[in-house]
Length: 269
Image (cartoon, rainbow, N blue to C red; front, side, top):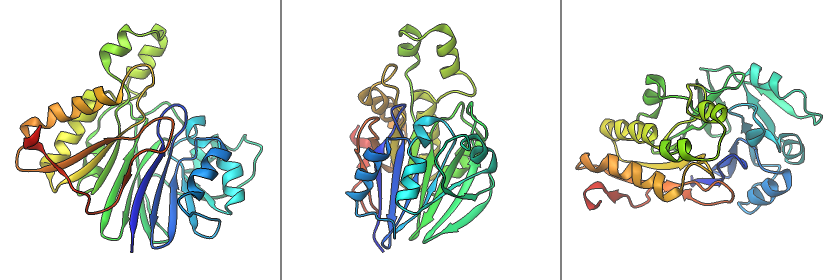
């Protein structure tokens, strides 16, 4: 079985991540325009016959805007907890849906998916782990704060996709209103570069080697170089382990991952 993960977009302009294995595909979030997202997944040879589901983390538009047209066109199913499904039910589009209770584990095609709660200002936001072909993929964006549960869910993952939304100094010195700054940095907002670095460092200490994507970067309060440098600086002290850090760009398809990618040695940095 060939396993591949593709970052189609990651940020406030829209979120979508595609996982493919054994000729079947699973999408996490659908926050682009239906046209852009349909074109992006078709370029990965995804059709109405092999898109087995669309996992939704929470109801905000940058995660759900294409749900109706996408799932109708691809004859797929929206999969989320009941509160999230209720929160997006105001949309005029109709779509097939499957209730996936937070904390449960379900089989979707070749994928075994487990959800877990995260802290964000939404109805019932979640992250996911996806086990497939002997590998575990961790996905969590829109996180208000680090938790021990998030840390434990990262264990044994081959790929961790984790939010690294903002640099605290850029946020405080930037153009956002005081209310928005408090919202972003608050316990139900977003994760800073430093907090993402701590989660990643602890994951590395757990072993084995892992690839990391820094996701949902702010267009105003962060840069890809700054986020990556923050993580790599934090990992300097962890020797004899290998890793790879990439940035999932916010406005276009960017990084892809498959098992067996060459990892960078921490000692080189």
